[in-house]
Amino acid sequence: MKTKMQTKEIKNFKMSNEVYLLRRKVINMIYEVKDHIKTLPRVEVRIGEARCEDNLLGLASRGKCQLWITKKAIDMNEDALRNIVYHELVHAVFGFKHDDKCPLMQPTLKTILKKEECLKHLLKYKNYKGE
Ligand SMILES: [Zn+2]
Image (tube, rainbow, N blue to C red; front, side, top):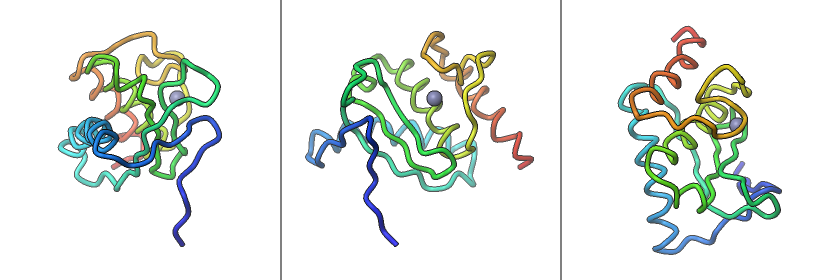
């Protein structure tokens, strides 16, 4: 069954060349992870804008391999965007909730990790599944 991927908090952008390029940036970061986790399932990605909460950067459907990234997040620098994408991936793929003690899974973006650190924290969650 195919259902539309929608969420109350983020209004999906309609696909266009411009939106395709925005989504490409996010998908490229997911591929970085796939280089380290060959078994990473396919993740559906939508790009949009927050309906109410201006600071919203991303969202995920926990454990359902679906995530949303806002244009606001994509307009941030590369490291910030990676933190947001990896954070949502942990929700979307591994199904984990927030953890105040984890710089990647804090509920709000406080620490911007460099690529290596970001990946290290993401891989922690993969290993919890015992793979
Ligand atoms: Zn989160």
